[in-house]
Amino acid sequence: MSPLVPDSFSGLVSGRKPEPYISGDAWLRHLPTLVEESLARWDLSLDGDAMHGVAALVLPVRRHDGSSAVLKVTWPHVDALHEHLALQHWGGRGAVRLMAANPASWTMLLERLHPNRDLHDVPVDEACTVIGTLLQQLDHAALPQLSCLSARAAEMARELGSAPPALPRRFVEQARSLLSDLVTDVAIDSRMVDTDLHFGNVLAAERQPWLAIDPKPLAADPAFAVTPALWNRWPEAVASGDLRGHLRRRLSIICSSAGLDEQRARAWSIVREVQMGLRAVHDDDAGELTRAVAIIKAMQPG
Image (tube, rainbow, N blue to C red; front, side, top):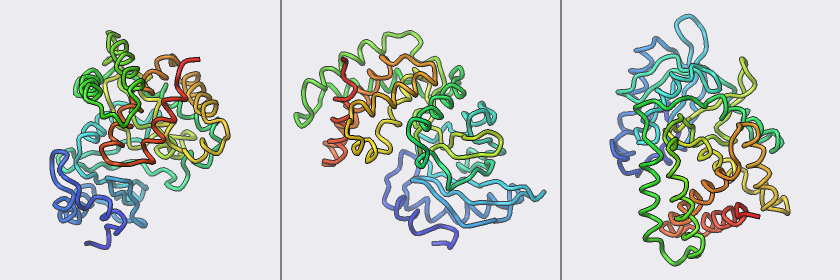
């Protein structure tokens, strides 16, 4: 593997099956070429050590005029298909600014933020306020190209209909009932929503204090987007000594800052966590199942 590609990143992508475009191994073999082609396309020079997330390599670069940026090269998968469209539409308001994109190669040139300063070290109440504020900034009418929450909800309903007994039946039935009510909203697909906005996907910036990165846009109900901020910074939630109160306060702060309905956010959180629990059962992940059940219990009415 090229020295541009850290072993830690190769380990995350290697062995991944196509979702549905190309396997992780096949893509990794082509990755050094993708990087070199992108550097040439946009007349870039490398300007620091490679960084990465779970599915994208991020390289600090300098443009021909000397200004800084980052080159992001993403392993092709469905969740990232419309990332460049969302970033283009937001135009830097609330999210990292898109400078250029080549959708055919899943590459983007983005403004450079502070990679080592995210919301994990910010007091959680303040961090939740930031997330809620960003959700409000990113709230736009849905683009026609986006996948729709109504379609995802139909998939959820099918999963819930064949749930294994390892997840408490009362939670499965509750999720089915809540989902049935939630999808009756005629506006369920009306807004463009970043469905993966959490403490690690917000970085410090110069032109405003915090900006969202790595969006997973969906035509959806904005209340659907609150849940990731519940399952992240999990050890801190457990250590609070009042898990229910801690998680409900997170949700309340986000909803208040974003102008969202708390009841709908709790309902979507129950549905999403039941789905997470089902996947944990399938993957034999006891830790994930325990966390999902804990969040479901915390979101119960009363």
